[in-house]
Picture (cartoon, one colour):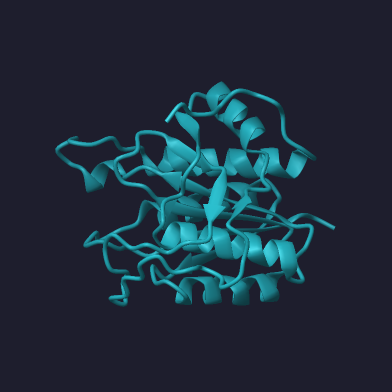
Amino acid sequence: MPTKILLTGFEPFGGQSINPSWQAVQLAAAELTDAGYVVHTLELPCVFGQSAGVLSSALNEERPDLVLCVGQAGGRGRLSLERVAINIDDARIPDNAGNSPVDSAVVDGGPAAYFSSLPIKASLLELRRIGIPAEVSQSAGTYVCNHVFYALMQELQYGVHRGAKGGFVHIPFSPEQVPDSSVASMETTTAASALAAIVRVSVATGGDIAMAAGATH
């Protein structure tokens, strides 16, 4: 049976008219489908709670073997392979429904954190090999991206999806979001190529590799 893949991105938020995470997911899905992979895509609402519920429904319907959730991290200059999801919602800005949770658990009684089950180091090595700026990130923040990341890993740990691989990636702004080049950006096509590469590595890799990619602060 072919590996079933679920890719998710987000709707626009924070006053933006686009979200490159969803654009990149669609492009990556097309590339992977052309290469023979079975890929489903999902646009998530940028809303605490609702986003996790929509993701859970898709997991139950599609039963994927591999899940890669993608979000936008404006200001970052590299694609970020997220290592850790933490059990906290702490909103600096309201979500798209006006919710601003502060110091709330993503899952009441859940563990403090989960690690990604994707081969993030092997993926980083491949992205460097093909010339795409990337890094391992130690924090997915405390906004809806982390909320979804944590909810995903909770589902993969305790739900009917045990054994599936999953994780989260942040991509920078797209150039059209920063026409004055005041902050870093990445072409959406480049981000899409990176997502496709991460999927290929994740499908082909049983475990991860030992490789320094930590942070001093």
